[in-house]
Image (tube, rainbow, N blue to C red):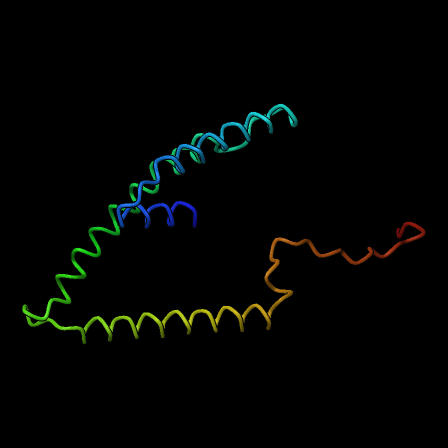
Length: 134
């Protein structure tokens, strides 16, 4: 996923990455062929991976270009919007990120054993009776 985002960023700043995208798709196909020869079955979601490698950077590029177009228009001091709302929003986003990260880390350290809810617990041994009760 990071590979697709980096390629999308490079496309957004007008760097020609068509060769890298083609090379990545080629290596995915060759790797899938080798994996199918060695294991006897095709890798799961191969066509989806190839589609993401080819189409993903273009989608990321379009999203980034649209966001930056609106961002630069918002920061334009002639319209009167200014930079203050952007700084406030960035500060709130950072505070939210740090809060969620702290909560996740605290929960992971405190309840390490409780995270595995699908794990079966052993049953206690059943009482053994020698004879029949009549």
